[in-house]
Image 1: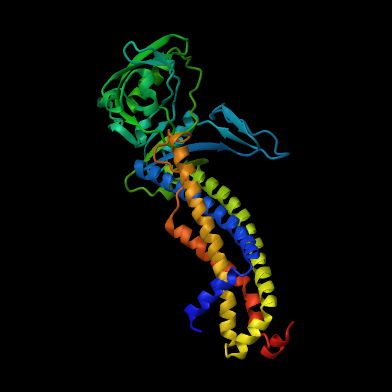
Image 2 (image 1 turned 120 degrees about the vertical axis):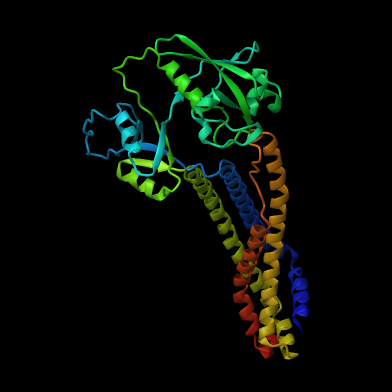
Length: 426
């Protein structure tokens, strides 16, 4: 018998005991189905993160924070530093410290940093276009440092000559009365903020662009000029004795500066610098961890299915003992007998993995499309489940390999059968 004849015979033999084969295939199906779905989640989220990073490009900037030393058991209170910020947020055993004026000066002095802009919290009271009513609008300061995923218009311009500029997400347009994304560009918005004494100040800004919502948030963004103007209005009337502190700062690097060397210098000075890629990488790490846990459960199901294959083929060898003896008596060598039973195991693995992957693709594609149009509609471009052909093929091949390994013991037992004793078997 040539290989093709052995394959045909193996496929036919697989369906001799339909119930036993079906139960084994179902066990493999569960594992392959789960791994295919979890792999698709990892691919979908990973592709979306890569798209987000690509859309903003390499901004050549670092987000810098200061982390207070962890206070372990018995360490006692930290020594008072008159130059440090007095604002600290406790987060479990560690604490998050604000940047003081002296911290800003230290960061600015680090080699490789061209400019530094502290993060400012803009607390807008309301925003209004013409007489369409006042609405509460979240406004992100210094948003020109990121490149938005634009639906219309252009990016924010941080040059002082550009004037006050704002960029809006698509879901703000209807309530503000701005119409479509293209028609909103060029219109003037009025923003109101309260100063330190509670007095209201108003500023106007031009809508220069409309962005799709993304991982970077769905709020509006202000350029540097509008940020400075609003901050000045907010701090009007603030006593000189009250120091200003910041949660973080964004540093622009020199064109020839090494990001790694700047990070190292900041670390030695007691600060942490992260690029956009670093921050999104942490998010992706969490997703990969979740996917890994789910894959572990799927692997357990495949291991259980492997024992099912062993049991199925051992029973098949026992039931077909006389048949094996007859085949060997007619000249079939032990190698071909081994190949025959190994092919049966591989075919069972193929059936379970192919059906599991196919059902996962059909079901996952439908779920992903529904989510994209409902829960995730504000994140255009995000398909939570994406099935890469290479990943699906790899899963099927790996499951077939597991099936082959599981079928090794029964196949060896069949190959070692003594033809005379096998023919006498009752």
